Amino acid sequence: MLCARGENSKRETTMNEVEIAQLRSYLASQAMRRTPAQLLEALQKTYAEFVQATHTIPDSAFYTSPQEQEWSAAKVVAHVQTMLAAYQQAISMVLECGEQPEAQSEAISGAIDPSLQGVSREQLLSALEATCEHLRDVVLRADPQAHLDLSWGHFELGQMHWREWLLFARVHLKVHVQQMQDLARQMEMQS
Image (cartoon, rainbow, N blue to C red):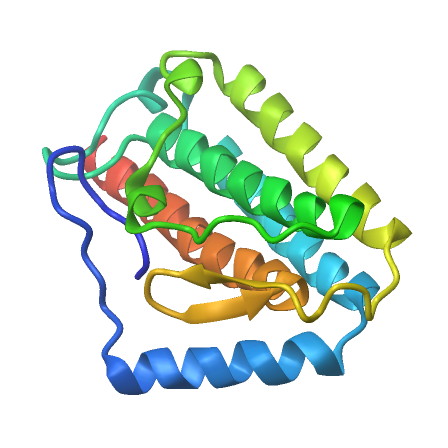
């Protein structure tokens, strides 16, 4: 869902129009039903699950793809950092500057910041923690109703305001928690 699986593959999506509409409806309703602090709490819980799943991958296998068209654990973490950094920067632009960010293009779906390639697990997780911390700080300082008129587009889900993007970050991260757990299972079966 929502991101590429392999290095050379085109972005694969498992969502059809009905699923996209359901997700869009969920994001719109829950982003306003929950407070920003509640949205952050849910994101933080999913983030903790992701970090825990990341630590289940042995160091010796962290950079190894279990199958040719699958991402290694390192690439998954680098993608999550790239994705969360893009969301954090856009949300910060709205909340701190009152400016509308550019639409998130399809390119972000499988993107990995080149500066993250080949770095250690600790460096990746440290960068990810810094991104999450900055996002937390910005959101907690903001008026929960601020700038809800500013929205920017997602290539599949359309226009969303910052609270919807914050909730979407959690939904997207859940996909990668599952991906990391699947990688751990595949590696266990191969050993």
